[in-house]
Length: 171
Image (cartoon, rainbow, N blue to C red; front, side, top):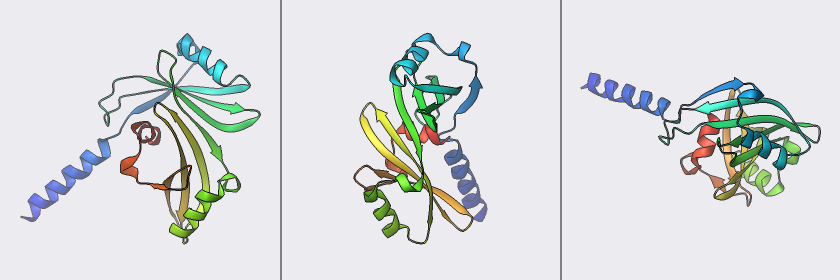
């Protein structure tokens, strides 16, 4: 009986580990479709792209679509990311933020719910279809770090309720 339970647990852990796996590889700007390059310039005209990545193989959503990801500086600040479909459609953008820039509504909820944790940093993520804005906050308790998610009103979002785009961003 123990062997069956052990095998079942191992199978479950292996399945969970491969649920949202994707591959992300750096690529040159020459490999990025022109529609994506045009939209990067249109949506972020004063940005400087540090690099491009291609992401593919989304097992979590059975999605075979390729996504192009730009990492860029905006107005001289690093830490920006945008994700596009090959036709140039912008899926989401994210911006790194220090703890000082996390809105008070989110910070107060963090302090109430995770008072034993240190707040490390955050990303402000804007999804475009459907329109949704999420704070991804990195917290740490001793040596253990994890991400917590809040909407713009300071409501906690459970990981199982996150949109697939966010899950893909994590992998």
